[in-house]
Length: 203
Image 1: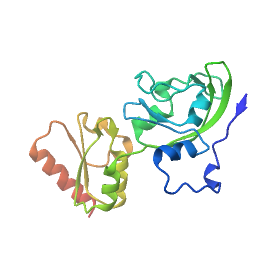
Image 2 (image 1 turned 180 degrees about the vertical axis):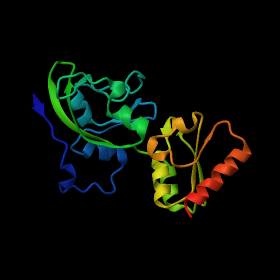
Image 3 (image 1 turned 135 degrees about the vertical axis):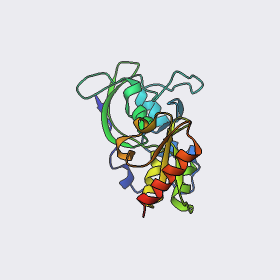
Image 4 (image 1 turned 60 degrees about the vertical axis):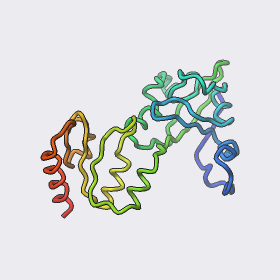
């Protein structure tokens, strides 16, 4: 079985500054790929295709969460694509690092990998970190993306927050349940009460 280690790549003396994205991902000596919020494969580099042993057609919608053929845990147990790292990161919004697995290629060969999965979010996180915010009403799920990375930034800045979800408090991860929640659809007075509670928490 081949062995590929992905740790320590950042320590190499490589200068990629100024390179366009499409050039950069094909220059890096590691496999890289991205998925959209629904888990559909959007982009990958030649190194990822080499690891998978195939080059998936991006026009096909059945490639979800990865372009691999098959994958197994080190115990030999098969990994369901829908339960793999990408699916978990899309669900939680939290990165997963140094996850080890065995990939099986279409030709039957296998390769050991160690992978990092990092969520890439839109400008909302940047605005949460840099804009003046008096208070925030955060919808838990927007377009398939969890709002928790934005909430983490606002929490560090001690910005009053209220979460909004169709499931009430049950739709919030335990770590965030101490914050006020309004269940959709909600009345104006319910929102006013939750916002007042959020302000009191930051005093």
